[in-house]
Image (cartoon, rainbow, N blue to C red):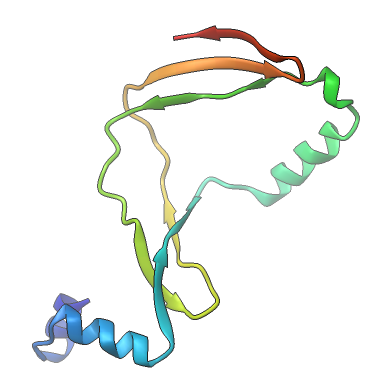
Length: 113
């Protein structure tokens, strides 16, 4: 933000000065809640509607865990008091290592690395 202020207004300010100004305006620094740009609320509602036809013992969930080369996402951001900061990110993936367990009500059904 300091570089933006310099480019737009040619005013040299420190990040500490910006932090104090935001805090005095009622903004707080919190952990960012990341939201996928690909998210579609209509598709999610359709999925939940279809899922309501099943009983809990019919379901088996796959829990994908792993790592890839993603880095550089901000962990904190500024937002007005009482609201969470949101960062929209593209969730394209690189080569990834996976651990894929399958869970049911009875526990782990199967796992593969």
